[in-house]
Image (cartoon, rainbow, N blue to C red; front, side):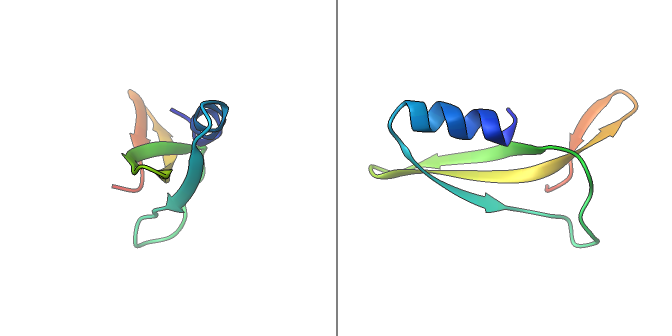
Length: 64
């Protein structure tokens, strides 16, 4: 799911949202941020986001 959609969904459900970003060791690829991991506690939801890279055959997450 794209990051902005995930944030909107969580906030509309009344959750506090924290966002962390992950990148590959060599540079910052282009593309939209997508949620690659989600962790919930009693007070907050933590979203880990990475940019996606469009490639032949689909989209590949660049942060893993």
